[in-house]
Image 1 (spheres, rainbow, N blue to C red):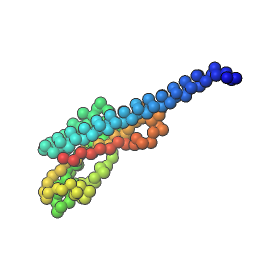
Image 2: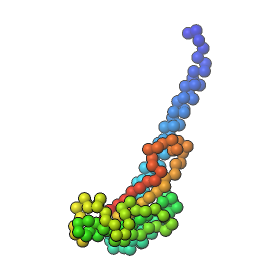
Image 3: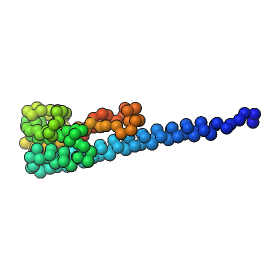
Image 4: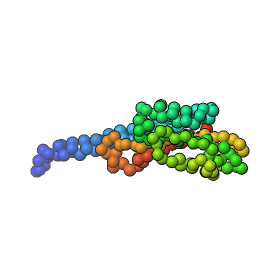
Length: 161
């Protein structure tokens, strides 16, 4: 024991504290992203359910936007509600409503476009389906968030009823 170890504890504490802080910030960032993703998934299901019950598409969009104020959905994203009718075995987009101020486009398509990707759902001729898509611009809440590339900048979900 020829050497002094007086600074060893300080260095170890600094390393462990840094590591614990990184883990803590990562948990906070992922937890927030998962919470918001869960919220927008629930909102999309709610909106598609409302539209499928015969409400106007604009009413479904407005309800989703209003219920998403806790995550600032009206300012950080948008809602698109789409009605499709199966014609000739292919779902065709009949109508769409978009939340006020949102300039994005549907990943499904525009009015009059076929949506062949939905044909695999086993739909019947003449059947109507309603889809609510939510786009949300995720804003990092910790400094570590900018280093985490696993969480996309835009969270997306859709519900089909």
